[in-house]
Length: 292
Length: 291
Image (cartoon, rainbow over all chains, first blue to last red; front, side, top):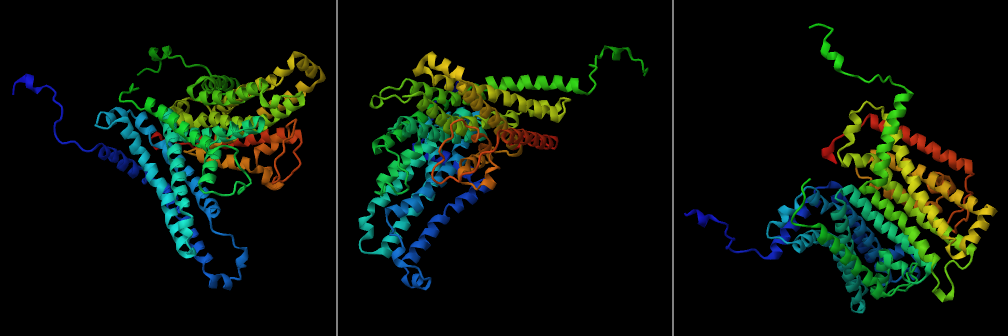
């Protein structure tokens, strides 16, 4: 072959679908996550709550058992949106927060610190594909500990309650899925942004916790001094509270603490948080790095 | 080989006999390095961001005039009460806590992450001198940063009322008394939190868990019984607030400790924690691959 014919030629064979390449990132990141025994134990513990709630619902409708235990049936609270919000969604949100705080800040930083970004992005994987691959891990695991176990609970309750309970409360399914998705995506993107910026895993976790902790306190102080909903805009715990309350259609004074903020503002808050996080991520994730 | 090797004459070994003078020189050297790191390194950015927040809030409150025709600082008493609230809820609870966590955790853990702690370990410096030098540097940086934040925020309180009000309060002794207490709280808080976070930075590979545990404990101290309140740092410093804050209906009321108890308590905590840190450091085996 003549030497001029040995010049670079682009690959002309069959290409995999873009999503297949994203799933490669997802597969490897997921495998990394389960290398930690502590996380595996935590993940298993997350399933205890739905199992306990399933048992509770069964006992709730088992009149013979309740009579034997001498429980005053009239004193039992009704199982409705408020019940699921308090006993299921709140604890699940907390577990999601812990899970994302443990995993999210450690997902991007090692790749940047060890100068691996050029290696990733020189393959047929672009920035959105890389971010989506990492995000899918948290979405997948987060879904498994939030709305996925919630669905059987709703069906179980609907089956035992009968009388069209499920038809009357179909909004709970939507509420559980949407709340979990908003919480997982926004927290994950924030944790990725911190991870891309800070680089050290331990410090990134600390910064992630600090941002949310400080935002919550700062928002509370601003609301106390100036009133209005401005302070709640920097407190994502207030934002998710407002969204949950609206989606689950529960009494506003359920927990005797309500953020005076419109749902649209709460949604805007999460949208802005995600956009800012994505902006930081796209600036930090680059196909070239100054190797130090 | 002759014992009077002429080449040995050219090796100048500094005549430094171990003692107070050497330790003082080493302490000053460590202090200056660590102080510069705590004040001007990239990690200090988080502290500067933190201290800006209360100042921004005070600036906004000082110039706020739009709400129902009444300003946030309608009267000087109201302004002092609002500053007291900001100091209690924002400066102590978050700025001081997170800032000290950032400064003191990175004294040792940061060096391990940067893979530079072995430089200190290889120098002929006693571990006691190293720990005290680092602690004092962190403490000075924390006092300067958070003290400055408190001072600026306090002075902003007088913006709507003018210099006359400030001079009146200064001559009445209100400024000296209140500002003295606020700055004293910053010093004691930095000592207490700093000591705890320096030790946790040495003890734990992931300092987030102890920080969350300490944060949870400090946040819940108001519902703790008096016997358990004594184990929280906030108990010792909150009692010194010139304008006590309402802790809510669930709070378990306990008598605040006297001033001398707060001071002795924080000094004692610092001494004990420094001693523990020295012990840990003497047994420390650095393995960077595990970080």
